[in-house]
Length: 116
Length: 112
Image (cartoon, rainbow over all chains, first blue to last red):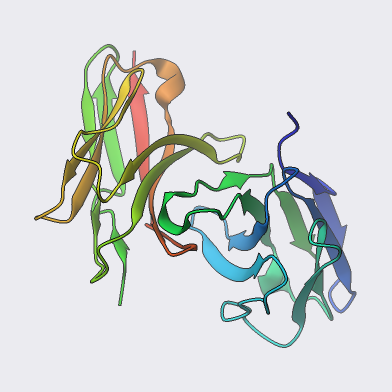
């Protein structure tokens, strides 16, 4: 079946503009995660959605970052008033979230954001 | 506190040889899952192998095996018969009740 998809694959924007990044998880996956990966670095957790529960926003770096998930499926990560330090690859992942620790995350191809 | 530690920023291995990538983890929970992901230069994160904390046998997937030593809290990835296409970043991760923690990664270079 289809994997996790993300759009756009690349986004170049000017400092101060808002951007929206989209993630479409694997069908049936109830958990959805956003991560940020700066060049040559590891993954930085941003936000986690699980079903109808309140999202875990503990990783969002500032109030310029927000995310929503509509209908328990597609998610949008919004960055307002972008800064150059926001330049990174934004990865989305999803999992079934049926049995806690046994669930595997599957990742999308990422969105490469460049803020000029 | 850091949950996942990968102490090898970079590794070299000769083609066709085996290589071990180290990973240690920290949790006080009894139930957790351990994962390895491969990230080639193209950027996608590819799931390789999973080990549950209650699994008594080490996980294997083709040329990948996970050397799970629960008492030492280590989950090393062993790649047998390395291939040039194995050159990539490798991340160890832990699932602690749907919160995933990732290590800083190991960059593996396979030499011809």
